[in-house]
Image (cartoon, rainbow, N blue to C red; front, side, top):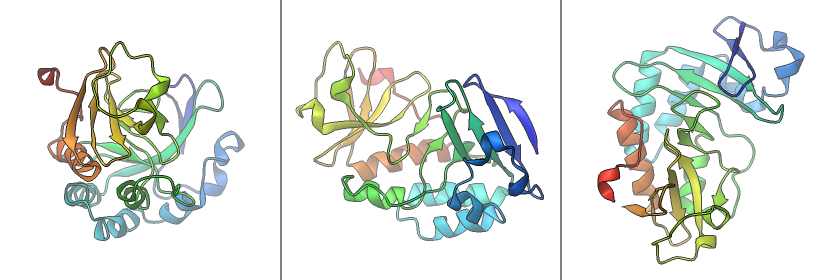
Length: 223
């Protein structure tokens, strides 16, 4: 077990196989959820079971690549302010993108579309950049309507209150979905939207990029 500074202007506690969860410092102990306790004795088997029941083919293949490599640790993050926290298993596979995965915890919010309820029954937050940096799919309870963002323009034929951000690129562009089952990218610089298809197809696009060892990102050639 060790401590390291993180990009969130705070401290992370890192655990490896053989470390004891009961020895996590009191400052970070609240981040050890029941799901993390369940997964920690054997994350390879835990996430292998998630891969087995995953209905998204690209995500399934990516999870299988992670568990085949087997290289992981558990990271418990606290940033600034102290309420800025996260926790998940970090993976370093060969040939596909690395990421930190937070196991699902509690009931999936019932207001989410059916596809996202299925997705968040498998994982919660998935970040392909370090804690404190943009780049990842948000957790199930972290979706915000884009009506709260000050966009210079908006070119989608849906009321902004019915469009939600559920992820971001490293540059701050937003992965979005609509209440009528569409998904894609929203450029934070000009409000332009590039749809990728249904919500399921958007999830598959993200994991296809991770499978190809690329950071999912908005392509400015789409503008």
